[in-house]
Image (cartoon, rainbow, N blue to C red; front, side):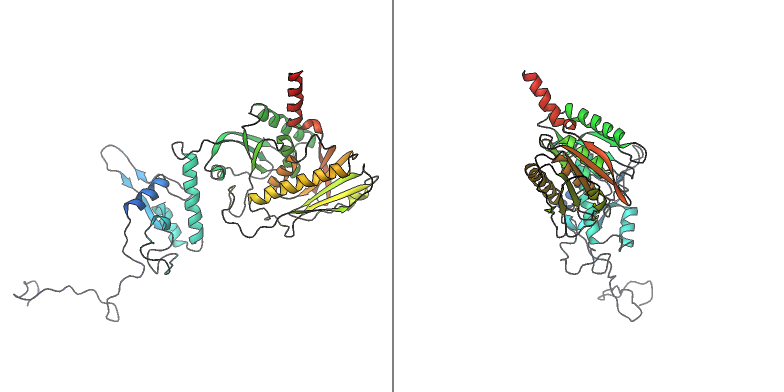
Length: 410
């Protein structure tokens, strides 16, 4: 049969696939057949709100120029574990039918899709799962028509001299959301501690007095000197519904990790005891670093007692879970109560704190104004601790409520 002529009768024309160099036709190992069922498409596009899931992008994936042009879709459904056995983040253990399901897909724009599939070391399987979950949490909280609970939180931001990134606050509160925001700026390099104390006291009292003492919820995001955190916690008291958050620098988020590694809890001991019920008391919180209080202790006239609250793995990354924060609050409360009973005549307490900022807030909350004398806080300035804020029982909002309610009943 000549080229271009029809095949002879009774013969079938056969398409011969292109041959590779060794003479055999082989499929592309990075390609695979794909099937997305309707349920998967609805979940993926709906929960992502039609936006790219990358936190530094989040553009809408539909482009409309005018009434005459069709809608242009620039979104792509990326695979977290590759759809083929040789693609980015491939996992041959995953069944082929599962690879095209919602759980293994992430909605991206074309640029971000190309980026995550090219930079495979920067965007491993686990990170893409976190990005997807964070984006869907952001959708539920940041977009007013989606997924709000009825719970509203007043947000209190304690901002020190370091940069404060608020972009993940909505994710941290999810599925609840913020009702209002107050920011208290604390700069120990610019202002005196007396001015800082007055500013914190004025603003927190104003926040509390405009709130329902029973129903209010206050979410605290602290990134400030520890003395400011402890004092703010004392003013807030443990009578209000307070939720504290830690900024996790490695993950650049305020949200608590969902599956933290093994956790260690603080323990308490009275390392130096006194027989004098009027002894001055020192409370050392050694959570991120050891505290050298020798100079302060030697400079104290009269008897003294020392309590220590510590963890075996002191480091700046110690606080990984809210349960550790809750346990620190319980240990601090028990320690303060025991000290008040053993040393009822003590006229001054001293708190030296080396720990995460939200831990300072919960420690301050446990300083019951009806049980404590004056409390001296300290700030570490190498090589020593210097006095910063002095707490008096009349500082607390709890004392003000008590006096106000007593006056109203007379």
